[in-house]
Length: 375
Image 1: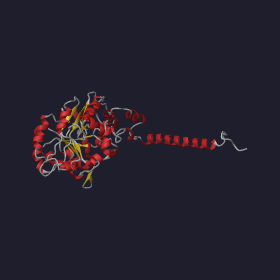
Image 2: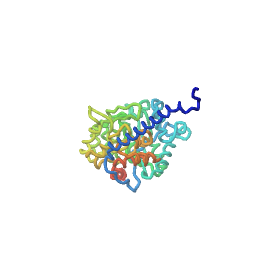
Image 3: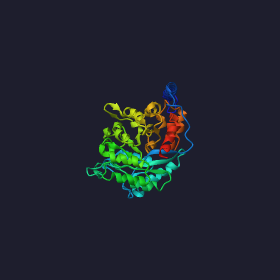
Image 4: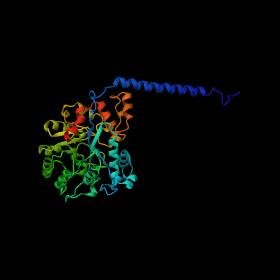
């Protein structure tokens, strides 16, 4: 008589396969745990406590699409890019919501989220100037993203925890007047991305601009290295070797991200920047974005190479810390499973970013130095 549908005999092979699968999974997991123990290298430096006083983040971005009379705009290429949706999601908003509430809504969201941080109390929110034409005026056709100074100055003044970071293309015909205006309205620094704004920092036409920066005691935070947050970039303009001119004139220059991921003349931009740190006492760098999955290894360089000692500042590059680019799970060699779970469970992006950096060994001195410099 053939077995019935309820006869357990046909299930035996399935049970055996299930047991084999469970054994295989357990073997893989156990092997992974053993491998983690064997290859676990721990933090880059012995971790130090996070300072009790709340920190200053010197590198924080906002976004705008031109809603609510902000004056912001983005290029059609950026508007069509998948990157825009990711950026807006990282702020906790959407294009439709901005069309309803205006671009200032993003800044309000940033301020509220920052207020919930246990360790970071203030952030410098950065404007972003655009490309300039031959007449010294804004070239909208070649500008990919524009966040005007007036908008950032006005909206940060409504908060208690966001500070004004200005951005001025030095080739503007009224660049010096804009510098004076920015300082009078509380700007803490000037932000550049030369590869996006399309000018050469070594251009001697910029000497009056640099001299005015020194006169106004405004530091220059400039991107160096590769730039991939936009749809296109002229990376040769972000070669750190192009910064000798402002440094020789006495400008306080802060090079973002230790010039990570780029190359010029066959040499890594980080290696092109490193000897300059020994040459100029007015040159600094910062650690924002160095825990991103596309920059693994750069933070270890920053913390262990002698050129960077005493010259690093704390920044987050928010909102990128609130995307899949940054996660404790990218550091299985450095963190224990418990550490990765604990850090991943932190809800506030600044606290999560800081927990990763502190656990990797970013010294207390680096975390405090941004506040010390801008004070």
